[in-house]
Image (cartoon, rainbow, N blue to C red; front, side, top):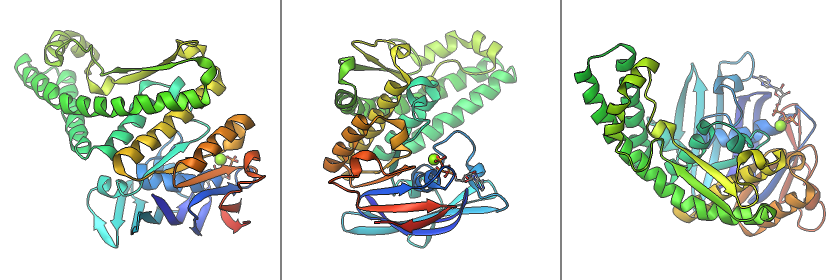
Length: 359
Ligand SMILES: Nc1ncnc2c1ncn2[C@@H]1O[C@H](COP(=O)(O)OP(=O)(O)OP(=O)(O)O)[C@@H](O)[C@H]1O
Ligand SMILES: [Mg+2]
């Protein structure tokens, strides 16, 4: 998959911009605060409807404006579709080929962008929430049934939590326990299926970027002990859940861990190694998407030059020459490995939210 163009309105310091993108590697260079990350963020918004940085999506709307819009012509094989998302009054509206799309998820499925950025190490060092969000995006794109299953689970979880807080009678909670356990199974099953595809891809990417750490191993945690029946566990922990006012076990607590032969715990990794692990996760996710959906997602690498040393930049760029269809790379300068032979397809200079083609 690739974006033929990207049209951005009122995203951070970008008032209005329409850029034609090339297949292959597109590089955006410019000084700090120029708008490079905002450009990559626009592509990310089309497939996530969320910022890749911490913070609310409404914080991305240009100061003083009420509305932000991102649109792109998305090419898959010989097909092309026009996708746009608009954020206004705290909600999203999406259009696909000039028609309104009532469900945002339907539109987001048309575009896929994975992103590695300066905060990506949180995927390794941060809370389970980061890893669930990352994994769920992959499951959402690969499994059509995931979105309704996850929405149902969230709804039932909210209702059970409300009942716990309000001190509902045991008979009412019996019903919520059964409902929640039932809703949990498809969510967990689809996630496990995805994780089974993701783990071998990740192992290969880790061997490419962090061979010195030895073999990598991944472990899945469903959010409750595997050998335990969730329905029975919910009943058993009800007293505890009542005291806390929320449900303590279930797919909303799912997580996965990463260990290495020579660095079994997360605390054994340096910050740079955390970043490389996160990069391996992002590229492995791109690979799973390509294998499952038949087309690559756009691969966005924000600030590549300042995140990785030159040797690791070289490895990513070599990988990109054999994999992926389109990459968007930003930095204060062109990454060193792209300055010799194998130059990027396009280079743009970014300044005050405006673009000037350099190549
Ligand atoms: N809501 C907003 N409205 C207007 N401008 C904003 C808003 N949020 C951020 N900005 C500004 O947008 C500019 C672009 O930010 P962006 O993060 O895209 O820069 P960048 O080129 O990636 O910089 P760096 O090299 O420091 O990462 C910054 O000057 C920032 O202060
Ligand atoms: Mg930036």
